[in-house]
Length: 380
Image (tube, rainbow, N blue to C red):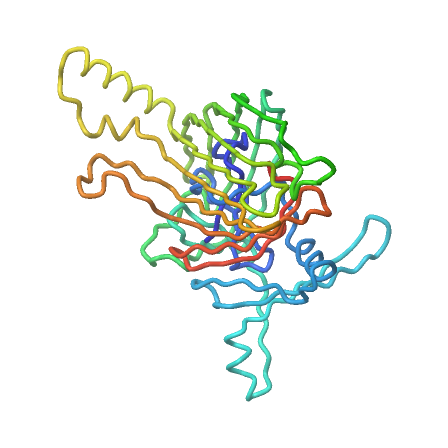
């Protein structure tokens, strides 16, 4: 599934970060501005897809890297040719082979390749939007575990967006119509270690991942200031909206990831409140209802219910571990499914011990029928 592959304690709130997808050759799609995706599996600082493929080819004996997308062309394999031109200058030629097409045309000796999508976006319902031309600039200053961070995004769209991969009934998101879109966000994050144990480590034994070598319990709180959007569609329409965001994440790890078996167990839970003003109004109405002994309305409960994402990681053997992440929907309006687990993603991680903190990850989303193999660095 297209995911916003961020570890759940990252301090960017709901800023629209690139999401991983096997549909494009670059391995990413951009979320629709103002329409954040649900969180997905964890990831650290992004390594570009060409560099990931080059690493797989050179150091992991994988000349072809597979991916799968039911909404795309099914099973595909990827290869990258990295050419060094001069000092700090290089170019990359990406190859993507669609296996079903290759099998079907082999008798006719006519191989088919597909170019990358020029401007691919994804909305929170999982529908892809292809914009003929989309130019954007993203300026960011990210603080430390308790510093101030800000983002500024400018995006110019041209051409008529086309939808594919969804149910075919989605309306075009306003942020993808021709014109200019601007967004600014300010966030404050604070992380606290409730408990951390550095003892009981094996001496002279390097952990499979240096960032996953301490048992601990930690909490992270995030507050994002009002996000402002402005759209100008050929001088015929302009508008602005504002919202706030609150988030809380708890993360627990047991084990030092040094031993061969069951030396790493991690669990995380994140609670997201997409609109701070709506949450405060709902909480105020609930307090008044309880104070005056009134029966609260179900809509009021819905206003204060957060979006919940839970994640579990367990070492299997040596550098290999299994991960699963799911969103938990709390909807008091549905008596039959008051709490619903949805949008699960499963992954196998292979920690690359010689690099200190790096891993190869293979993930699969049953709901969206997408799978991908990636390389990631410095996840905590």
